[in-house]
Amino acid sequence: MVIITKRCVISGHVQGVSYRASAYQKAREIGVGGWVKNLSNGTVECLIQGNKDQIAKMVRWLQTGPALSKVTGVQCYDEKPADLDGFRVTR
Image (cartoon, rainbow, N blue to C red; front, side, top):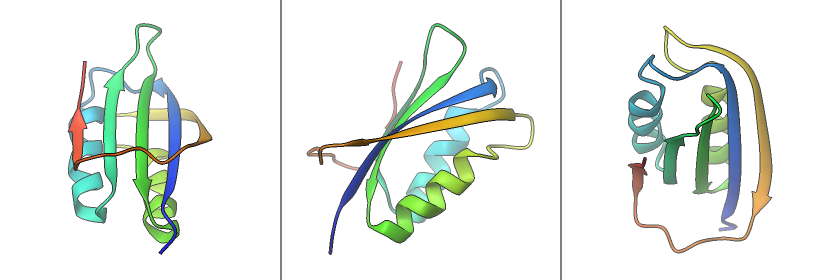
């Protein structure tokens, strides 16, 4: 199985709407590893790692987010695989 790692930056109304907590729940449901955090410029950054299907599912979710969010953009970049243990919310 090929493991893919992506770093994504999500813009729009994505802070103060439970985006990180919802991303955590979705990541655990899908089975990806990584982390999610708020950035000082109002965006959210997320590192996700998994197989091709898992990454595609998670990126699709990131493009919509939770009900109260309004995502206007998701930029994803390839990263080198990391040694990740589960998924977490960071500060």
